[in-house]
Image 1 (cartoon, rainbow, N blue to C red):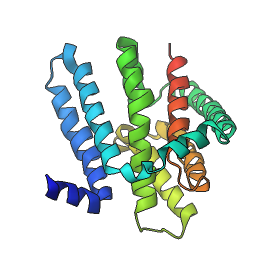
Image 2 (cartoon, rainbow, N blue to C red):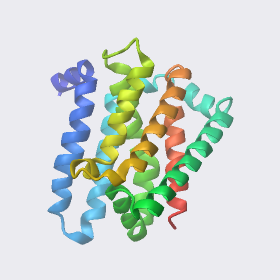
Image 3 (spheres, one colour):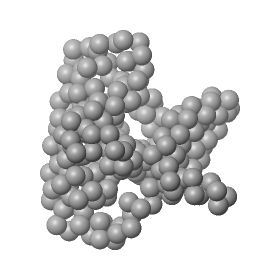
Image 4 (spheres, one colour):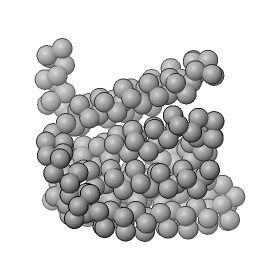
Length: 226
């Protein structure tokens, strides 16, 4: 166990990538697919909880000053968080409307979330509003953006590259099938990442700010699906 902990300490980026893409998306999806239908949502919840606590464990240095970080979000940063969330939400609505109006579709990812939320609102609410925002912000901002040495001195270029990775990941099914109709969704996720990562940088890497925005945005997005 000590050797594993030491390895994680020295390789937080690799550990978080393996945890999310191999552990959660690949192995987790296989486990869910072999689970009887009526138990799949509970399996998804357990896997999401394991992912959540494991990612926090790997990225725990991000929370060394968590009380101060939260106070900043709720205090001086509350107005910025609210305004930013509102702006992103309006952009989200506009781009989603264009996607549906022009192409009559959204992403497979969004359709799955909407379907599961309609069937299990409380469990999917917990996963979507609380667990996944922490996981995705820690992975794509703390680990991939901040901790990698790649283009470390070129934050604008690096933000654009990681934003493309983030948006592509959320539209992976459409990209694999070369579905051009996903363009508005790609732009949607790209804008979200660029805005929240800029706030992350400007706040001296206070990870709670993008997490708070992500949580609020997911809450609003789920509310309008009800």
